[in-house]
Amino acid sequence: MPLSHSTASPSPTPSLFAATRWTVVLAAAGHGQGTGSRALAELCQSYWPPLFAYIRWRGYDIPQAEDLTQAFFEQLLQGNGLGSVNPAKGKFRSFLLASLKHFLANEWDRAQALKRGGGIPLIAFDAIPLEKRQRIEPTDDLSPDKAFERQWALTLLDQALSRLRREYTLAGKEPLFEALKGCLTGDGPAESQAQIAASIGMSEGAVKVAVHRLRKRYREVLREDIAQTVGTPGEVEEELRQLFAAFR
Image 1 (cartoon, rainbow, N blue to C red):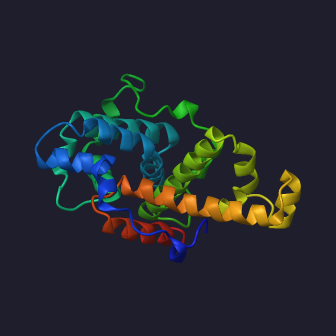
Image 2 (tube, one colour; image 1 turned 180 degrees about the vertical axis):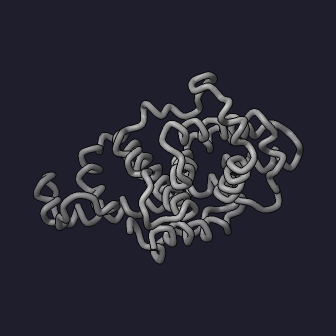
């Protein structure tokens, strides 16, 4: 597990939610306006892997899953996607999965009629690294719903890690991040902090402090990203619990 739930930072303050993408969508739905369309498009671009995984686990091959994912986004963004959003309650994760299930149940004929590459694709599947695509491939031990939840969690963790890498790179500390990131992800060989310190020319005490700061910032970034997909501060905690439950 990349981080411990019990050590998470305090909940985001209500002011954080004034500018999050999902609350913009909710506000637009509540007033019958289309101002949330751009925010919805940004969310869709960030969270396509869980949808693609769900479709693949439903038995569609890769080209079909790509077409269906694109067609779903097209309908969601060009149609009345905000009309089914309940401004009083709702998370983007729940809204997205329910909308996809409805789409697959009722829009197959329309999706089949779409010509591959006929519109402006929201997701550039050809540009996605092979490793990331392979991680979404179906296995026998997951249901489609479970696959969606796990890919949702992995997407959140990936986004948080990418944000941290950018922050460290802009600060001129990319080598430090690369040396320490295994302390967050558990990827690669297990190295002691003494070994890491020797490899980058830092004292063991300095590495210990750097790891503590990295983990703290990772938790903060993860919570900020989760806040982009829910409507209230209290729902961040619920989404964190859902994230950890996806790996059980």
